[in-house]
Length: 550
Image 1: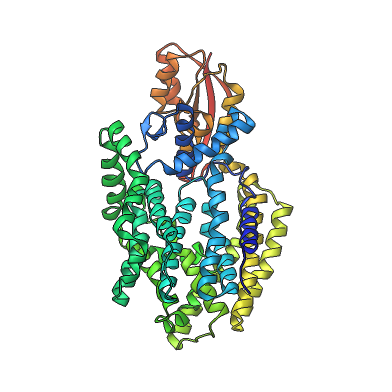
Image 2 (image 1 turned 45 degrees about the vertical axis):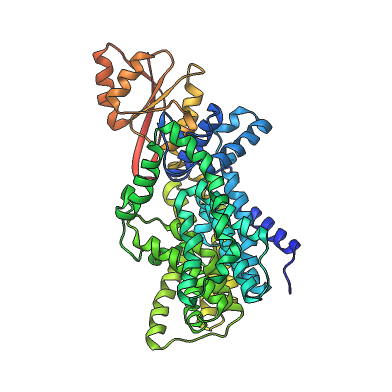
């Protein structure tokens, strides 16, 4: 079997359809996603495509590439649906959706090029349903787009590597694509793209003691193409920011993460291995089971290339102080290909007694994660909303038997059949979460409900929301750029300056301070409504009232 353009197109379409559910109903997720969306919206409305800002503060974390993509996507949606669409989440998530739809076919191509068409398809399927990939592909953050770019870098390295293996010339366009991909990666995330871009060939050189194939990528002049992509913007932002961008983005954000755990994400080495059971579920157990077969074939050029893709990137991000699960996401396509090769191409290698004990323990963790994943939606709905969803119940009762079947088949050493069952369980469970659970979790949708109450109640077109107790970026995105996130005393003073139009959102515990400050100025307030729920970013329960001066 040979994969053709039609196969790749169908894979991309399938990924698109699987990633589509929940995209329009999901509220802004995490704290990063609304920052990306708000900064992109401000870039679009201000017309300033150089200086990235969140409200009135510069957002100097990475270059402007991802904001250009999201602003462009939002602009197309604005032309089609009107300006009110800019406060919706889905236009900003389109780049991630399209990137995901390209990542899976490209992963299949990598697998097919190294181990055959069936292995490529299995690798694509394992990545497509993995927890971290599914989560990131639903969000308007940089990680899915960055994964696509790094996958393009690795694919061109693989093309040059295979050309050497088959003793054929490497086309000029392959080299051009490699250096342009590195340039695009620099525009997306700065120097991070150089870790896999140069780490893979460096690791291969250290192992093979042969760097001649590197010349196939025309490094003597290729680096000029890379710089041509990023330098114009770098010069512009350096002038605009007076050098502040590079001191923050490189000095604080990039280098600062190496030495110190930023934003409470400092963790010891081993974190990424620890969370792999969930992040790559359901493929994680099959990846671990594949280790003996991979080790036995470590001298094969195909395996060597993939290990040189995985290990430098993984080791770097295990060693730096700041750790988040998506930092090693660019290694997942290579892990998926090696796992698929062990499932499809290679006979099972059974470890010795200690290895079997460790694999049994890991399998128990994997099964626990899978069962929790299958029932999590039903439990969340019942505990938070005191309701049972028929659609989620169908998803739970559809996924649990498949999960049980996967566990039984693993005990019977029928790994390939177990993988199919586990992937089926993942697809059904994920559909239940995105279609039945998340849209009904009103308790954690504080920002959408607070923004909707503000929109219904605001007396003026240019009313400003002053939030004293709920300071999430999602509220800024949904309620408007000029939303004020300040304390209760400052909120009362701000409200005094524009009592006719502005409204204040105050938690019940902060109301005494808020009212006391107003009374000092001879003011009283009228309550327009309340929203209560849990701030999922920190777990705090809030009871927010919306107030206007009498």
